[in-house]
Length: 178
Image 1 (cartoon, rainbow, N blue to C red):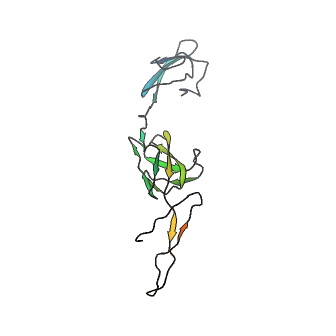
Image 2: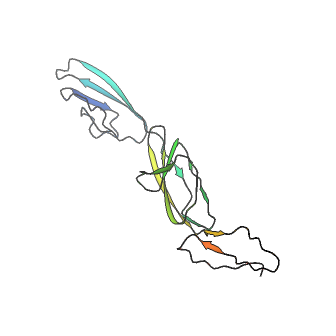
Image 3: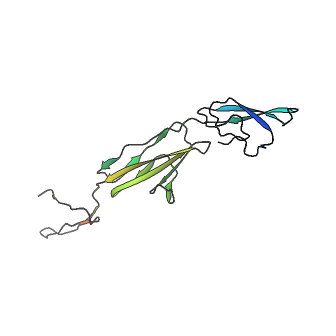
């Protein structure tokens, strides 16, 4: 982060602490601290007549830890993706890594995947820092429709039918009782 983008290069600067600064004598040094740090600039005019000190506090928030389940294959039609985070306050779920079409802002989502589907999550903390992750669920659920009720008189015959709603599934049937 640039510490003093509106600084004046007509003055003499000395920044402390010097660790994590690219140039401790620049009017606008770049700082890359790993922890929150207060930088103090001692600023003098060219004649060394006037001197002032100014401080800038750079906050480095804790790293966002996001835990989601591993990629998996399911047979049930629904799957609950549960997330956990140490500091995330907001969540955004989408079916693409650009998050152009988000579908949920909940930390946990119930999904119904057919085939192989990847879900992307972005977790954001109070400082607008974020991490992203994804989970791929292969839904092997059987998507069929059965007639739920047949009314026949004794001695009549009925044909039972199962309609496969997913053309990519090759299903086999076993009807009980025989």
